[in-house]
Length: 275
Length: 103
Image 1 (cartoon, rainbow over the protein chains, first blue to last red):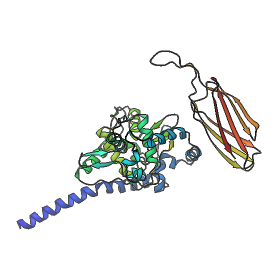
Image 2: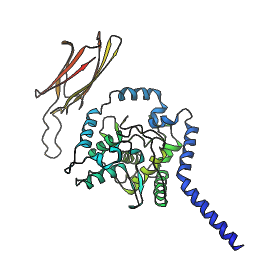
Image 3: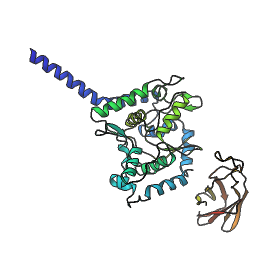
């Protein structure tokens, strides 16, 4: 009897364990179902367009702008930065497999040794450090431009973020909790607008669905320089009268980990123009 | 100082759609440097000329109100494939920018 009980308990434990690992994938599927119910007309690959997928007029304007985007000069500068050799003669391409092509879709990932999330910007700065160059400031224009060019080398690659192991799952869950927690004077959470009210109007703007939000960063917003994903987090928090966190903070990196996972399977597109 | 221009042309029927992106700081001359409190000297494009096969098709006088890195779009009626389009711009310091495209 005792043996059977032990076996039962062990089995339950293992069931919980399997359930926990399958968690992120189940979350993503449930989210897609939810979006499908609210936005039945949007095709899966169009989620990368965000709110533009909901408004043909806005999409036409976007396509017109993208045929000759206003950020071409900035991207030239970014390309120069990427190709400029360090003092030891190596370039950024030497830090990434395949010369930096088709790698960005795997970021952010969870580093088990350092037990923290590593974003693509972290990887760029690590590359600078390993080659004896000074690191760039997080949230600064230089790093954002550099990352815009580096990520553009992965255009068309499917986002493929993995959550493997207990540490990774914990970081994912922290990001998810942050996404769902209400903050600021307006008492908004990210999820309230981008899951529950996705596609609805907030003043004059339609709210983009969570799926696809992380597949096209950094982006150029009208009249501004390149904007990174974490800069956008800060803007969102300021708009909801919240207190934004610091760039590259554990909170934001976990949040980036979570929302990028939700864009899994979508083709990357960098940089893009947004209103 | 300026790196020049980027141009793109598309031909639809006999009308060429031209888009030009200029690289220029376009200082108005009324902004103050936050650190020193001194006015930043004016530096903006004030004259733009577009020619198609040497014939002027657009001439514009600009001022300080035009934005940084100006974007200029216009259409030329009667353009043909192979026509050579040149856009020249000059700023108030006499510096010149130019761009070329073949339709």
